[in-house]
Image 1: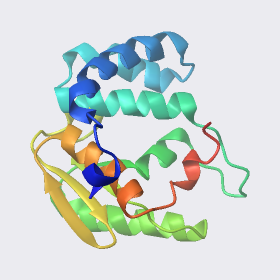
Image 2: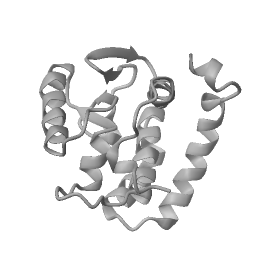
Image 3: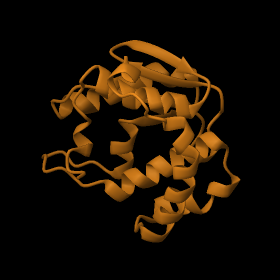
Image 4: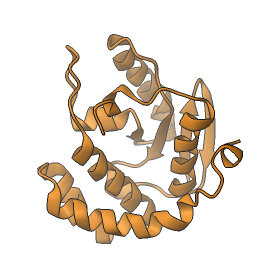
Length: 168
């Protein structure tokens, strides 16, 4: 469906190059120390961890607090897009926690990517889950998972996450 709506979008072909360029730009232009420390370790990470780290850095760079009464951190906001869990068994608990946070803000849960690992640097490859509307889609690489995540917003005409509303 996405390919018929948006022909000639070559995400996989461009992501490898963009990921490297973004990493360099973010390292020089971001103020958040936690993100800087993650970007400093990027050369020692798996390709999937590198991708998630760059997206985390980009999210932190573009992040702007909304004017709602509930404030959230960059980490809380990023977790609504990509959530790292220690095991597949903890998926149900984490999903429920995200739903509760979203309900407090009177929003709906958007698609969420779940990765298994202790943190960004230790993502276990070959197991990525994309959950939307109580359906779970599994993937073996992060690039395809993230591409599908983005495509869902276009194909299903979804509202973008509230945390991205101030990004221009």
